[in-house]
Length: 61
Image (tube, rainbow, N blue to C red; front, side, top):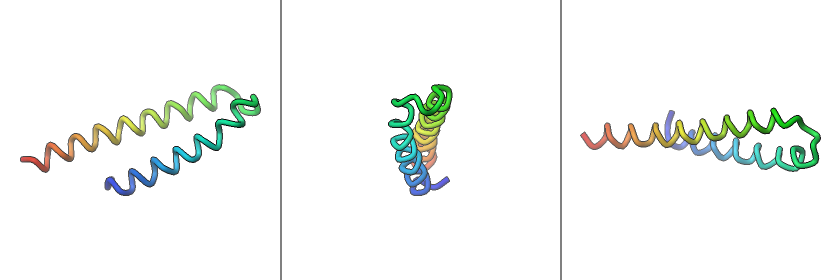
């Protein structure tokens, strides 16, 4: 996955999670939905960081 598409996807996920916050705060969505969304965002960010480190290492050689 290219860094550009990763950033675009991350931005979309960030906006989507921000849109979910008011619903979660009002209790309109189950807490499990919020937890799943949070885990997905965290895993996605970690994946991007690890991916960036590996691409930097491979380009240095």
